[in-house]
Amino acid sequence: MRIVLIRHARTRWNDAKRLQGWSDTEPYPEALTSFWKMTEDIPLRPDVIFTSDLKRAKISGKLLLERYGSVPLIADWRLRERHMGKWEGRYSQEMVEEHPEILDVSFRMPGGESILDLYERVSKFADDLKWYCEKRDWQNVIVVSHQLAMETLRRKLLNLPVDGTMWDNLRSSGQWVLVEV
Image (cartoon, rainbow, N blue to C red; front, side, top):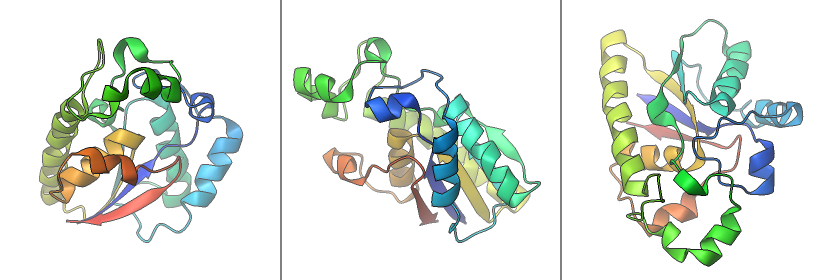
């Protein structure tokens, strides 16, 4: 099975470097144009597209349907970004300076999730994804998700550890990675 993981099109909050988490922000028109260009060289035609259920991922996934035509588009809440709890909307650099523990994979945001919580959530999606693909004979999959969710899912699919090295592998909006499992 070949899976392309794509980070959704940018939002104004991405540009401002604010923690979005589960906030349901939308991409803006120029960001969708950029997303379209950044995804033109994806090396597969998907049998299915999965997205987070948040607008920024769903809108990005729907845009891909214009390229690939009639394939199923399935939104799944488990592909959401890390829940930032009470810190949603805060500026990321400010939060790292005030709370460097935010980068520890076991640190749970006040009212939100830790990276390990996120990993557990996306792991359940990954297990279901494998089952669905076997049942429906889907070989090529696109998943449109969020920065941390995408990296934790990649690590689950490749049996890599969830540790401090994940911060070195985060992707920008519209960037994608091919995973073969």
